[in-house]
Image (tube, rainbow, N blue to C red; front, side, top):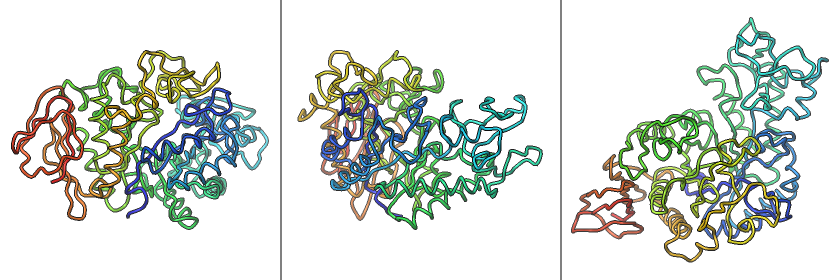
Length: 514
C-alpha cells in the first residue's frame, strides 16, 4: 500500500510558537513560509500544522469557532493557500490538523443549538436530560433545560454523529442514521473538501476515535471513517488520513493511513522515554524507561504492542514514530545531547514514519513552572517558541510580550549556534534524515528482523536485497555484541570494534551495512 508516507519524514509545527512576522508576539503562517527553506534543507518531506482554524483559544486552537477560516492571528485563507503552494514548490506536503469531534461553546452552531426553540442545529450537539448520577452531560449551557456532553474540556461540546447502540430509554441517543447525525457527517466532508481545495495533502484527525458514542466494538467508527476515506479518495487519492487514536491497528483497520503509539494509549510508548516521575504527564512514578542511562528498562514492553500493531498494519497503513508533540514533555528533558541522539537513531530506523516536533532537532528543553497558557497546563512547557538565534526572544518575535517565553538559561540551544557544528544535534538530525531518505531499507515498508531485544537492542532492516544493521545501547554501561557480517558503518556514537565484536560503550549506537 505504498504512498508518500513510505519514505516521509514529517516536521510538526505549533503555529503560534514557530515564527512571528508581524510583531504581535504570536507565530503566523507567513512565519512558517519564511522558514520553509530551513525545513526543506533539513530534509523533511512534510509539515504538520497544529490547528489553525478560528478559535476561542481556551485549548490552543482545538476549540474551533469557524471550520472554514484561518484564525486571524495566523493570517488568512490565502496565506494558507500560499503556504501549501510554497511547500509544494519545494517538494513538501502539508498536513492539516482537523478537529472533527467537537467545537468551542462560542461556535455559531452551538449558540443556535443551545436555544430553547428548535432549529436546524438543535441536534448538532448531544444534549441530555439524564441526571448527573447517570454520568452524561457536563453543564447546563444556554436556554435549554438540558446538559451538553463534552469531548475534552468543558468548553468543547461534542458534535453529534450519533450513537452506535442507542438506548431506547435515552431519547437523546440518536442512531448514526438519524438525519441530523448524517447531516453532521456531510458537513465534515464539506470541511475536508474546502481544505483540500486550498492545497492540503493530509489530515491529522484530533481524537479520531471519539466521534460516535457508545461504540463498544468499534464497528460504527470503522464504517464511518471508511466512508470518509472513500470520499477523500474520490476527491484526491493522494490525500492521506492520520489518526490521533493511539492504537494503530484499530485506526488503520478503520481506514486511516497512519496512527501513532502515544503516551495516552497503551504504555508502550511511555515505556521507551517517559516512564519515570517527571517525564510522564499522566501519572506518577510508573517504571523505568528503556532509553535511560540506568539501563533498567524493558524494550519488550514496547515491542509486544508495536509488533502487534505492525503485523495488523502491514500492507494497509503505517505507524508514526514521534520525538514528541504538543501534549508531552520534550525528548531532551532530563537528557544529554548524546542520549537524545540514541533516541533519535531508534525513531528514524524502526519501521514506520518519523515525526519530529519543532525544536527537538536542536534539543529544545521542557520549561518547568510556566503558568498555563490557553489550556496548556503542564503541557505549556513544551509549547515555548522556537529558538532560532540569540537575539530578542531567540529570534522568534520582536514583541515585548511573546506568546510564551523562550528558554532563558545560559547555553539554551538555537538553530544558529548549531548550524555547521558537526557535533550538534541539528547536524546529527540532518545526517539521520539523509540516511533515512537515501536507504530504502529504512523506509516504512522495509522488512524488520529483531536480533536481540535488550541492552543492546539489535535489529535489521531490509529492502530489495540491501540489509542494514542497527544496535542501540541507551544505558550508561558497556555491552558487547558479535557482528561478523558488519560492513560499512554509516552512523555511530561511542562504539568500538574488536574483530567481529562490537563494543557498545555507554550511550551508544551504530547503523551499518551488512
